Amino acid sequence: MMLKVEAVTRQFGGFKAVDGVSLQLARNEILGIAGTNGAGKSTLFAAIAGQQPADAGRIMFDGQDITRTPPYRRARMGLVRTFQIPREFKSLTVHENLLAAAANPQGERLVNAFFQTRGLRAHEAQLADKADGILQFLNLARVRDVKAGGLSGGQKKLVELGRVLMLDPRCILLDEPFAGVNPVLIEEICDRVRELHARGIAFVVIEHHLQALKALSNRLIVMDRGRVLAEGDPRTVLDDPRVQEAYMGG
Ligand code: ADP
Ligand code: MG
Image (cartoon, rainbow, N blue to C red; front, side, top):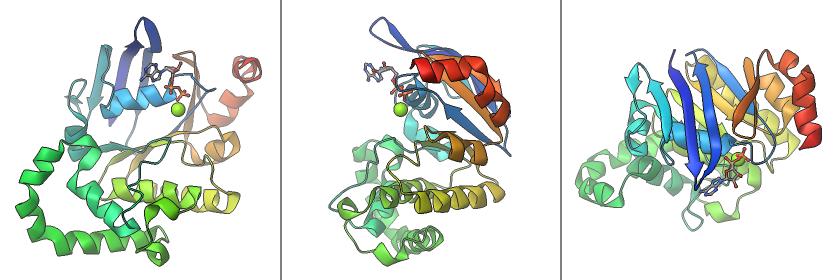
């Protein structure tokens, strides 16, 4: 298993946003996570990627315990996430946004990036080429020099994906990649995810858009009030009466 989440809990005050969640992800998988608003999905990602470390439980990546490893080190190991609300630098161009992600991966302290500036300069041209290759892959070459703040919702989601691809990930956590994205671009994002998956990148995808998630995922988990409510084959899970009740009741 590439990723193992073992009974992870994350509290805010006394409130358990994530309450004893366990899951596993194999190298060759796309795992979907569904669940109503407030179920704890984004907080689970924050625990896995390290922005909100687990209060209890354990997270293993490639056989290493990363439960308390800082986010930028998890990113260097190949474990990265995107955010539900895209975090692009609005006044930087699309290309510059990708370069910035490589210089400051997943919350690495800016002071580190500053002291690494000389080293980065040596790789500048190489990084610029790498960013251009990724923009081409994502069909964003046209907007390369456009300020990211002016992009559509779907393009911002693609930039968010481009930023994590700069880090040569082996496991990508996508938080609501289809939210606010038009249907044509949803299909395009799905195709890019499938291509990356075919190249050997594993995915965990949080999504409200159940049809797209069902089509994309090999396996599906539904969360409810901080816990795993159901898990298994996407079709079976979505037909589960408890899942339907949680969605109706939510
Ligand atoms: P989801 O992504 O499934 O919609 P979240 O993980 O964002 O759910 O939130 C789960 C619960 O934890 C919600 O009740 C939310 O209000 C709460 N929560 C999330 N982040 C914080 C935080 N930083 N401080 C306090 N409460 C939080
Ligand atoms: Mg969320």
